[in-house]
Image (cartoon, rainbow, N blue to C red; front, side, top):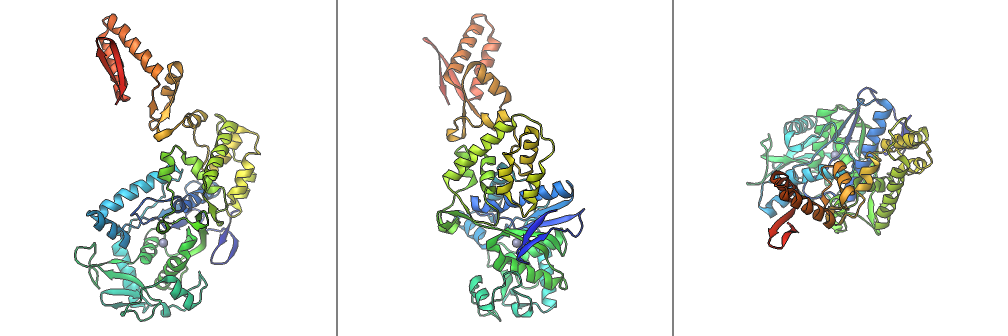
Length: 466
Ligand SMILES: [Zn+2]
């Protein structure tokens, strides 16, 4: 039995899906205009871990997990203008980098990844419905949601009205009937990305994207809606208002799950504060994805997580230990105490502490894999631990390099040692002396492919790196 802390109920509740054969989960995805930082990555690692647990409990095909891509937004438009490119150039670039970073962190791709720009028709339809029902109105090419029309508004964040207006930092605009009203549709000026609609050539507000895409892909009421704590208000509050009003009062989600922030020093990590560290930078420094994943899971997901170099160092030690303890054992059955810890509101720190108490390497490997850890071979893990300046992997020469070359994965570029190269030059010289020019050329070409250039001169063969 899985228990989850439900932000709406303000307590842990037993997780009982509407349909255990089709459990639905939606997590608000990134707005793709810049590189994700470690704080942005936290919810995706947390909900990936929850998805693994649900699939383990209810069956591999029991879950439909949707994570959207917000690919139309004022920040995207501003970035595109600054670079003088089409917004799609910005969004395609950063979506690709986002996916690469997530995969490096062991985050599996979601089952559904709706893109806002491909679902405009569904958003327009939902907005039309809200206007018909009297929950939204048109003004000067805009459409606004009428907050006073929804008597349950504020049910998730439980804020009073003044705090809501202040917290939303809403634009005061002359066309708004109430300061708390928020945008469903806004007009685009000439040259700015937009779509035709009954109200103006324009673009959707951020909140309506999620409501419309949830409805289109998962249904009116989903099991789990997730995201960072900062999304509770106004984003999730507004999603709830739109969806519930459009769907005759049906609740949007049965469990609301929110993760805490990642802090740098005493501040929240955020792009606007300029104190960010990205998975991309950490990976380029030679840290491995599973080390970063363990670091992100080392605190309970609802607690703040302080990101420090000490945390990364300790996480690497913990990962090294897990690989030493498991060696190349094949995973068998996961340990029930680890599953119990995860089932209790995803208590990853407790689950991690229980891992190292497991004596059977096969059980340990199976248990770690429930957390998305220890997915590599022992050899692969420690091979990747060799000195990794500039993201390359140094190795020794002779027999050992042959072994390493035989097991190297595609992304582990091997920097050949000098002894290895000298041995190859000697081998080539022998081949030439035997008039075996085919072998001599092959050796030269193989080295060339690795960035090592041989030059024949009067004093013999010398080499240099390209
Ligand atoms: Zn959302």
